[in-house]
Image (cartoon, rainbow, N blue to C red; front, side, top):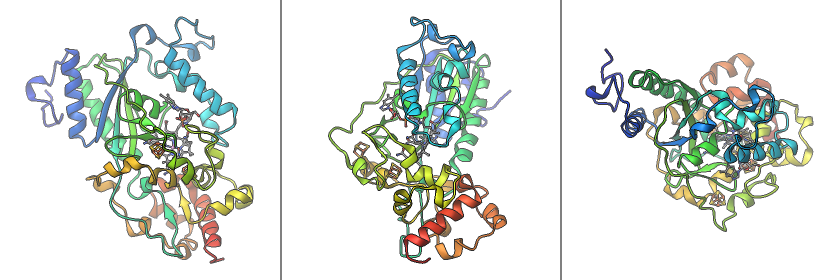
Length: 356
Ligand code: B12
Ligand code: SF4
Ligand code: SF4
């Protein structure tokens, strides 16, 4: 018999059988909080929409079946893709209908448990000449690892208290539009810089979610509080926002320094010049958001920076060999750029700082 020690936040008496919707929702939220998630919310899917939808049959869904919400998501995604804003991220254009529709990912999905982890620390990047800059989300251990570990524990707990439930967890690891569902679940709103802004943590949440067949109690969707502000749009060094709430990733330094696999010469000259000291990711639009005043330092040890990520010395990094790169960044999101991409970024930053 499982003990409550295996399932933080749940009294022993509740462990095996929680069938009541609100008790189940409360127990899951309590457990998620105890597992270290900073933001937790539930988005739900009405029953008549929770059967598998078009992408499984390749036939368009009759209009009465296709929910307005999926259509909304699908339209946003298709418009982004047809404008080519995904660049070389071809995986983003694979089966957009599935990406827009969680019931195609988990047939019978009724609820999405959305979680966020605060990764803000009160350290400042050391941007003295000769150093590169690494985006905050990559200062510590890879959030995919940190969030996935906890979501797996939460999934196990859910399966114990509701054995009939099917669950599937993702942390940027599946075809889910995570920001849109987090907004529906009340974690924050999609800001003009296209990231989720939390009224409690500002720009600094990473997201994850559990899709489940359980019927849970939904939270209120969050309201957009951007108003007339446009600080993030003006802060972008490459004018990567064709309009508010829309990002042309091909111009974004985050894309160019993390996802883009080409050589220096494959990066258009006008963008190459703007890379500056960004050697992995970019926080420029996130940094200026006024809602960051509410950010408090994370208590999560895994997200604390090292001297390497806080003040990365370009001259030293330029001499890395592949084996050392792999060893240094084996638990870090920086692996994503791959050795050749990371060294390309370092060389560009050296050139921008007049070192080469
Ligand atoms: C592809 C991707 C990227 C691409 C493209 C970014 C983008 N904006 O699409 C690149 C490589 C550039 C990138 C960069 C970053 N990323 Co990224 N990325 C993703 C990924 C895998 C998919 C995003 C996606 O679906 N894009 C497709 C377009 C269509 O969606 P969209 O951006 O949401 O844009 C639409 C909405 O804004 C929509 N819209 C406007 N208003 C509303 C309102 C509602 C209700 C809805 C539904 C839609 C909507 O209209 C836009 C259409 O043009 C997600 C993980 C995931 N599976 O969701 C992480 C994710 C978005 N990334 C994340 C992070 C942290 C970053 C960076 C901050 C990293 C960094 N510091 O360098 C930067 C931020 C750059 C920026 N300004 O967005 C986090 C964001 C967390 C948060 N608080 O929002 C995510 C959620 C990963 C995670 N699990 O935590 N990323
Ligand atoms: S991450 Fe940097 S380059 Fe990308 S949109 Fe934001 S400010 Fe612009
Ligand atoms: S900087 Fe201003 S416009 Fe941009 S996300 Fe924050 S509040 Fe919205």
